[in-house]
Length: 202
Image (cartoon, rainbow, N blue to C red):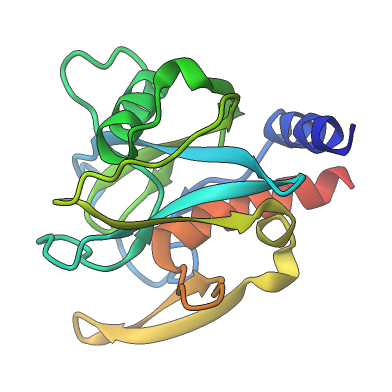
């Protein structure tokens, strides 16, 4: 019953209004070009039961990748021409990257689209995994698949603001470390959006 209650809470949270999301949220002094071209992408925020509680599935990107090597991310990527919706894109990418069958996924809703510093317009699709799942990673892209308790990632107090120098100035971002994993940047910002909406429902 507790699992069903948690999903009901997430559904309610996803129906609530929310603020825009971007890598610039904590860096308001940056002037963005008005006519910048953003490329559509989608990620899957997959919830699966682990030992009687919901967990969020995340990946550690391969250290051999050209972009964001070794970083923590949701399964997902840019739209392909055959992707009619963010849900189709996110589930296709999750199947390709970690072997998650689209038929095992029940979409619960979407978080606010997130704009990245790399000029992507990312739609986070929140879903539950309804069948037993054993990850099969695409080794060229994914070094590791792991999960984090949803209860932690829906607690805003777990998130902190950190910063580092990038392109000549100090840039700030959200981070939510978990054991050996350092979840930060766009992934942490999207999770912070989920945490804020869930917190508003409690």
